[in-house]
Length: 215
Image 1 (cartoon, rainbow, N blue to C red):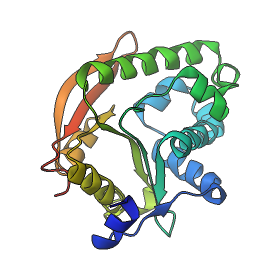
Image 2: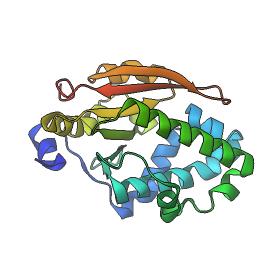
Image 3: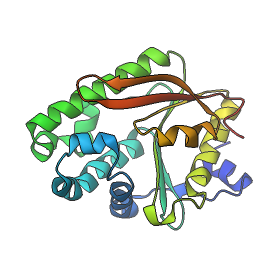
Image 4: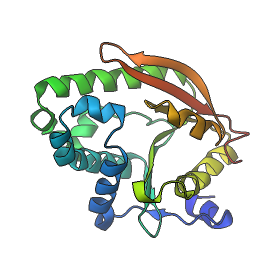
């Protein structure tokens, strides 16, 4: 059963995020994540963050489209990005192939090195915690003006139901404590709580139980 078939069965309408919606998706993500700790770390200056965060997240979406899956709804008010078992993190070459080559110039050398340190820690933590087959829930975001309407749940439900049917857990990390309870209500449990060294960036690592992911 593919994710669209599961979406129909659960009455959660989702559609692949196509190239023509890439600009809208990147603007939505930038608005949703403007104050997210990772991006305030990468772009400490709010003016530069407002200018360049859509570019950064546009490239993240392109990576998901190429190596995993990118989903939205017909109204384009939410975005879900995932990576599949066996390819739950990307190499520097893969990031560069999808638009990140100018990142040292866009972020500035100091912020770029900081971003690389953070990403390396995030990837290493995932490898240590999840040694078997698993999906990676890269991100889910909702238009800030539409939050609280169940859009995020509607986007995630078919994906989590598919993983549940396959008996494969889903892994994610969040850098915002208020997100922990949100994911716990959707079948995730905290595996590990840590912080990115040197950058005072907290991180909660969560894993779905296949028996709960579809609830």
